[in-house]
Image 1 (cartoon, one colour):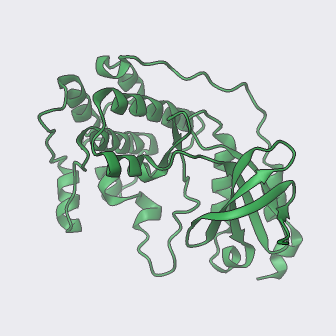
Image 2 (image 1 turned 45 degrees about the horizontal axis):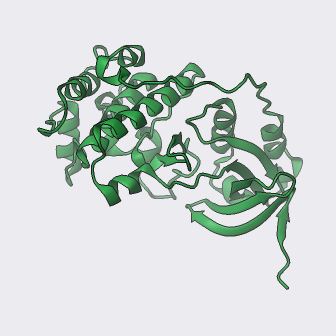
Length: 296
């Protein structure tokens, strides 16, 4: 008989995902029966790549951002060699896959996802958190079809030798022009641009800026050179043009998006979870374990 592997109160099952520095396993809380996703990081790898501070920051961010449209981090555990990040288990896959399999979404469905995205992103901003890599691959869907923003940089950690573009700016097609100019930028305003690109993709089924040659891609983004398909409703078209404004000073802000007529249709603001006292002690304990220093 195969022995069941346990980490704390969690029974560990199959691998459901793999990144450069982490494996994600399906696990079950033996006390509550709840399914969770367990991200397993190897301590020595983290130390070798000098990623401790970055990962500590990402975990702290996810603990701070407790919102119905953000993947929830339950807790962080550690052994001598591994760090275990216990996350909400999301069953509906990526929004990206939905677009790939079904093509463009209806106006109402696109708007509903966009409303949820804006709610989640606005909450992150209220906590001083800027995602900087918003794209359909980082938006998951739960069993009710609600959006869950994921990946606050934990798995988007490039291997040595890989261009740092992703970590510093996000994914080229979704990135705001001011981020490309490397002159410093407002994280909230840059995130809004990415949300606009996502709305376009939901409704069109393809990207507004898509060139194989990066130089051409960047110049199109910098000039916001794109056109909306004929089937876009006037309201959506006008909102997208206000979001994909290449000038960050005049680009529409989230509070203005919220009062936009097209956006408001059928909009039900999310009810926030009860106030929780966020405790970062376990994060610090995991990383400040004296044994970590000895493995360098």
